[in-house]
Image (tube, rainbow, N blue to C red):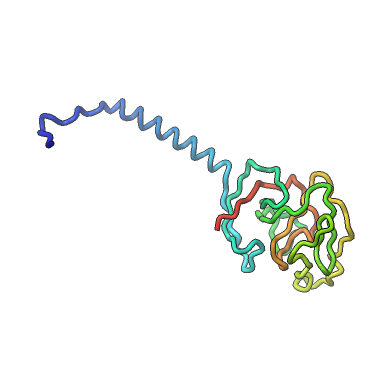
Length: 177
């Protein structure tokens, strides 16, 4: 059915349209600010990935209670130089929590007596240090700390700089692609 010129719909007054537009815009801004305040994107720009095959991560800054096996984002400290600059966001896997028993030697890293795959301190040569420099006899992860590692032999992680204070955690990370 075709409408004739005299049968067109009545137009909405401008003030009513502006009110609806303002409500919709306010909702978009509120939802957007909540999402942007909670989530951040992280990019692993290293040549050799420590959590292959992923390079992009979503960081949930509201989830700061990581569990074993989860990925966590944290701020690098001076102990993580020369690989990471102070304050740089780093993402690693939580493999030990407070109370877990950890040991590191040339053969690999053990958590509660179980050897982690690809966990020998392979970067010792790159760091121009003997492997024995990074040996840690079995110790207990202290309260308020995590033991974090990458999934590859050449990941610069807890094997080289020790336990991570939970206070440095920026949030839980999710691998995207």
